[in-house]
Image (spheres, one colour):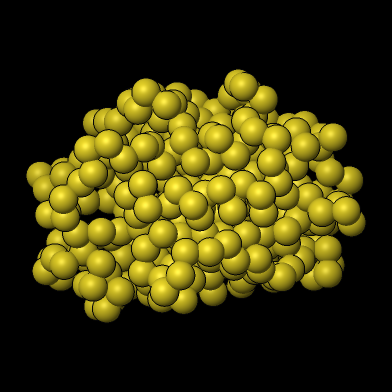
Length: 278
């Protein structure tokens, strides 16, 4: 039940960043996952459980970013045994040579093969700013690629046309934080952004969660905070990775990943990668 918030108009807001992107990955806490590293031409953490070794969020040196979020569906809904890995969607975008629009057209044609997903793709345009696109295969009248103008957005486990309340709250928190980044150094910026990703306030009742989970309140309530954690006696599931991507006006990238490495003792590990876009 991941969330992503991003800002592509930071320069217009008087900030030194052309892109600010933050993401929480929510997953089974013991699912095998590798730390972020460069492999096959892109930087990302990888799902080591699925054979495809896909990713939820990655970036290439030419400024393409692929992010995949699931669309929440009822636990008792029949799964497609032959459904391809959703993590492979982001991986295929990052390892291929297609722009978001061409990749999106192909994804539209194959979207029904997958379980519910929300793909967010970014790429540098001719002016060296980021264009943002998204595509979902559930809860929409038509499966198609949407392009968003410069701005600040939140993406979650439902289409933007029917946001969950925690994403609405998170977008407001993110905008407040972004509005107060002036004069802060990079470490202070990272610390401020992390407060959004670690927010534990549950936002319920949430009609959208009720519709999509078909579960009673006492279950879905644990999903309604930005930082998710179920009681361990219910299910070992929750937020297990925070990622922050900052790209400044000179195309310098800082990719910071903070990942859960010890479930029992709640121990986290931070990895930071820096490079310049080509």
